[in-house]
Image 1 (cartoon, rainbow, N blue to C red):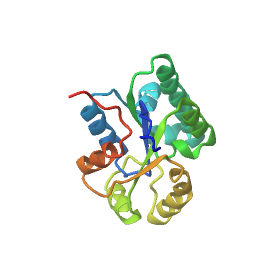
Image 2 (cartoon, helix red, strand yellow):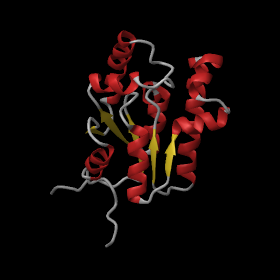
Image 3 (cartoon, rainbow, N blue to C red):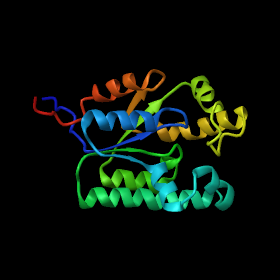
Image 4 (tube, rainbow, N blue to C red):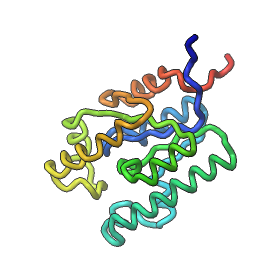
Length: 181
């Protein structure tokens, strides 16, 4: 007997910088009428600084500490009030072992928005707000270092397309509770 995938109500999008986590997350949440949380926004709100400023003034270790603190808060809010929600994680969130452990313990479903390196480079080269984008060589190296972590996600979706198509692919996974017509 085959079982349909169990629906989950805490869905987290992961992937490298430029993969479309925030855009797809907002669209997906709107489509499902679920609350949406962008972990990077939680961090900037708590710090009162933009992410590049956090990296510049406080350093990456402090950013990672703040990231873990905000992730723990998001997961605690979910545990307290287990209403469905979509969360866009930062590109480096699941690279930290303790964060991945927190996500697994909470029952979060991880969806990797996978995008080819060349497309990611093109998307990120046009922005100035990515503190870990220094040059193409370090960008490629960071991607290769993080890829094995993204591969641990429960699902992989191709994000080398329009955000609406990314959301369609996510909805097609069959992981969301059926909404009565």
